[in-house]
Image 1 (cartoon, rainbow over the protein chains, first blue to last red):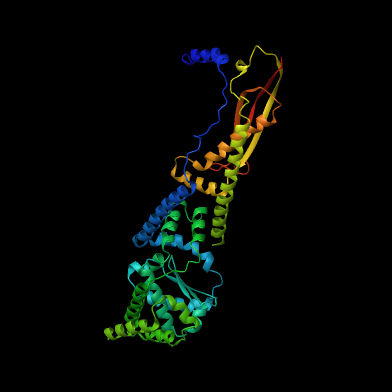
Image 2 (image 1 turned 60 degrees about the horizontal axis):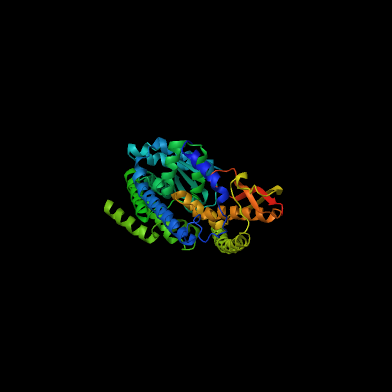
Amino acid sequence: MAVLRPLHTELLLNIKMIKFTPKTVTENLNIVKTSPLKQCFILLAGLLAIIFVFYFLLGLSVSWIAPHISPAFEKKIGRLFEDRFYQNENMDESKRLRAILNNLLKGVDEETKAFGIEVRVENNPMINAVALPGGTIVVFSGLLKEIKSDNEAAFVLAHEIGHFKNRDHLKGLGRGLVLLTASVFLTGNDSIATNFIFSQIGNLEMKFSRKQEKEADLFALHLIYDMTGQADGAASFMKVIASQDKRSNLSYYFASHPHPETRMEYINEEIAGLR
Amino acid sequence: MEQLILFVVLVVSGYMVGTFLEKRHYRSIEKRETDLIRLPVVTLEEDVIDETKKIRYAVLAKGNAVISIDYFKRFLSSLQNIFGGNVTAYQTLVDRARREAVLRMIEQAPPSDIITNARIETSAIGQSANRRKSVGSVEAFAYGTAVKYKDD
C-alpha cells in the first residue's frame, strides 16, 4: 500500500488534465485466437489414444490376472451372477446331473476340486450351458432335451470342468474381469461401483477361443476315459452335434465352438491314441 | 448407438449454429461499440467529474446480459478440463456477456456526458450454476453512475 498510495494520488491529481480520446479496440487479447475445431480434434485424438492404450493394457492383463484369482475370491464374484441365472431350478435334472458331476470330480486333481464345482439345471428353453465364476455350471433344460444319455451329459460337464481348470470362464469375461476384480477387491461385493460395472459387462456371453474349446474337449475326453475306460460319450455327443442341421438350435449354440466335424476329427484321433 | 448419434448431432449443430450466432453477435457488439464510443465509461469515481460544471442529474445506469454456451463448446470445455490449460471454449462466452452488458448499460442510460464508477459483476446461472465443473450460462451485470451536466 505504501508504494501504491503516492501513485494513486498522482493519478487523481492528473486526472482532470487527461483528455478522453475515444478509441476502438481493434485487437481482443481476451480471446486466444485458435480454431476451436482444430483444438477439439487434437484433444479428442489425445483422449482416444489414452483410452486405447488403457484398453489394450486391460486386455493384456486379463490372462495375467485370471490364474491369480483365488477360488474364495472367485466365489465372491460368482455371487453377482446368481440373480441373473438362478431363477427356476429343475430339481430332478439337477439331482441327476449332480450325481454325474460328483462322479467326474473324483477323477480331477485337488487344485480343480478346490473350486467347489457344482451343477444346477434351470428350466429354460435356451440350448446352453455356462460356467459361472465361483464354480457353478448352469445347464439349461433346453440343452438336456437334445442330449439324453448320461454319457453325453458327462461329456458336457467334463468339458465345463475343463474350462474351470484352465480359468477360461474368467478369461472369457475379458476386460470386464479386470474391472470387476478391482471393484470387488476395493469396494466390496455389493457396492454401487461393482453393480454398475457388472451391469455394464452386458449379457455376459463368455467368449472362448477355439483353442480353449479344444483344450476343454481334450480335458473332458481324458477325464472320462480315466474314469470309465471308454470314451463313448464324447464320440456320440459329437455325433449328435454333427448330425444336426447347421441351422438347428444345437449347432447354433455351438457356433462359437470349432466346427463339429473338426471336433470329431481331433476327438477320434485322441481316442485312437488312447487305445 | 442412438445416444451417440444424438450426441454427434448436438455437437455438430451446436458448432454450426453457435458459430453463426457468435459471429453475428460480435458484429453487433463491434458496431454498437463504435457507435457509442463518444460516451466515456470509466471505472474512476467522482474525481473525473468536471467541477467547473453543474450537474443536472446523476443516475444509476445498469444493463445485464445472459449468454449461454452451445453444445460444442460444452464438449470442447470438458475435453479441455481433462488436459488443463486455456479453456478457450469459455473465453468468448465471458467476453460477449461483459461487452453486451456494458453496451446495454450505455444504451439504457438517459442521455449523459460520462458514466463513472462502472463495474461489472459476473455470475453463473441456470441449471448447472451451482454444480462443480460445469458452466451453463453466464450473466454479466454492468452498472455505473450516468452523469449529465447542465448546459451553460
